[in-house]
Length: 351
Image 1 (cartoon, rainbow, N blue to C red):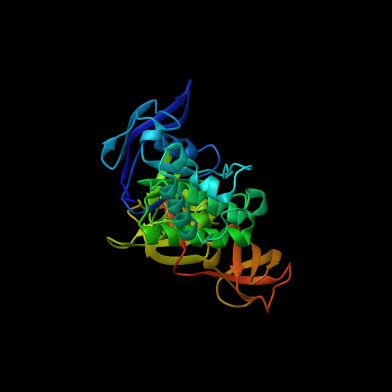
Image 2: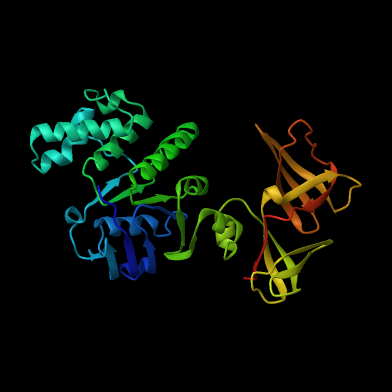
């Protein structure tokens, strides 16, 4: 199994006059996991299908391992895909499902059996050979689908919303297993999801898509802490959006005024004046009435296991905040003082 790089150059996909993907360019290094992240209809699955060869681009070029595959049929691209539905054959055993591609390729039976058993062992399903898909849990079916893709030893492995059919606990477990497998085998993986936490957990890099184009790409931490615009800030986790006034202090830092609060923080090259500001919920610090800060009132309070979620009315508008102080919940109507942490407050060019 030899991982391959991927490059999309000015790729577009049109359906009549409607653009599903519009002039996107990005590259993926061999042996890395890159996630295409975005809301429904943004073009991420269409992009994945064009890499797989299941859709042909209207314009642009796609390269895999430096080879132009733009017009190459899917079967000749050395790519395997794990679908959202898993697409297992219900009448076939686990072994038969995993072996199917090798059987179609007419490999010797002994070689097929050895490869299929090795693939099942890789995903932790040794001994499940004779079971039918209906006798497996959702997570086990997902592993069979991965084994069926791995057994073909592809240069690129593609995942289309692979965890959307699983419950929250199993999703967390399976995303960890996919990441561990990708790193252990040094696979090139393109992963599609609309779930920000899932993308951040598994990815080396994330390509955020919106309205058929790329909004921003980068490492998970970069996108969360340094979003380029309001859309990325809101899609990469919860973010309060407020307006503030920025003035430059030096080549790096600026002074940001948010109502009665003043912060010193990187100005990110923005011009002085009115700016949008993204404030992460964990950056909103709630204090008892009388403490220094901006006055506010608790409007909503929810206990979510290990955290409290609050909506606080302030002169900046309603702010969504989270607090670890579950042993000291604040009732609705409580007057409070609000300060902002030194992290998680990001000025963005005004829209």
